[in-house]
Amino acid sequence: MWRDTMSKDQFLVKDCLKLGFGLMRLPREGGDMNRPVDLEQMKKMVDDFLAAGGKYFDTAFIYEGSEEAAKATLCSRHPRDTYYLATKLNAASFCCSNEQDAKAELKKSLERTGAGYFDFYLLHGLDQENLADYDKYGLWDYLKSVREEGLIRHMGFSFHDSPELLDRILAEHPEAEFVQLQINYADWDDGVVQSKGCYEIAAKYGKPIIVMEPVKGGSLANPPKPVEDILKAADPDVSAASWAVRFAASLPGVMIVLSGMSSTEQMQDNLSYMKEFKPLSEEETNVVEHAREALHKIDQIPCTSCHYCAAGCPVNMHIPEIFNVMNVYKLYGDLDRSKGDYTWRPGGPKASECVRCGQCEDACPQHLPIISLLEEVAETLE
Figure 1 (spheres, helix red, strand yellow):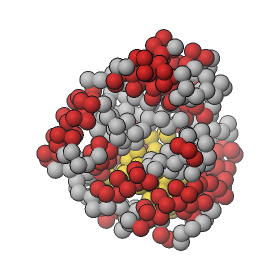
Figure 2 (cartoon, helix red, strand yellow; figure 1 turned 90 degrees about the vertical axis):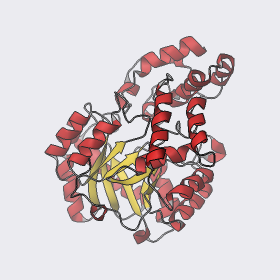
Figure 3 (tube, rainbow, N blue to C red; figure 1 turned 60 degrees about the vertical axis):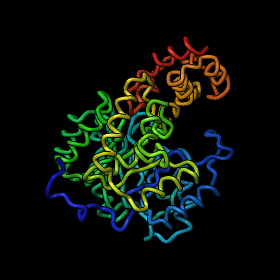
């Protein structure tokens, strides 16, 4: 499937673990996602990651507090040539309204991180809805110009749409040196995410792949019992997350697999099997296939908790947290417990307080019908 001419020697990272540290779901003070980043815990995680041979760190302009945390825990504490730092420019309408604002994001990101330059710079979350903005603002040529200036080393993009659109983008923009895709075993044959189809398009063009959401927002780290039983029967001594991360890392052409680690425990678990990474065997691949089949029999809201939807919500609704409570009900069927959790766990307005503005649906990289899903939550849990 992968181009015969594509070898690991052509990857853009060298002497590096295949595991990348995603700086989106950072540890928070008191474990509360609405509180500031826990910088002391993050410092330990950064240090442990580097000590184990990890080098790749991924942030973005729109990850609240992330670029600043990268400065405090990584860029100000470690020599610049000991790590790779990636960030992203987002030109979607919920982030900026004109070309000047879009291009100003790079300068702001450099100020926030103090990195001096970015090893990898991405156009963020391309899809059918926002692609015209990136073209209208001339951002492909802009990335080429700042690469020539030395402000970035490599240019690429992250993507949330169909294989057909990805094919078109890569044909029109051969200057893209890599592509970042959502790949996990749950979404591999999903009709919306289409992980497999997008992977095959990247392979067609010989583009190194960075994987995001290998654990699907954490849901594959704590899968429902039918899936957990399959994985535990195969190997009771390894985590559920390890199966998901290794699935993505085993695919030919995958350069880095990002994991949005939010605790030292998650870091240590990931390092336990990625420090000396071994691709899935044929037998292990069959185990993952059976786990996928079991998972697909369970109805869930495929939210990855990226929080893009919540960033511009006019009533400050904590949408991913609401969906998380609903998914727990869908998975385990305990209505009384889920109703109890719903009264306090998400925080903020209830699902029934949605004003149906549609901002969340425009921002959602999964293209979820969020308004109707919130109506379902209100009918079920309120």
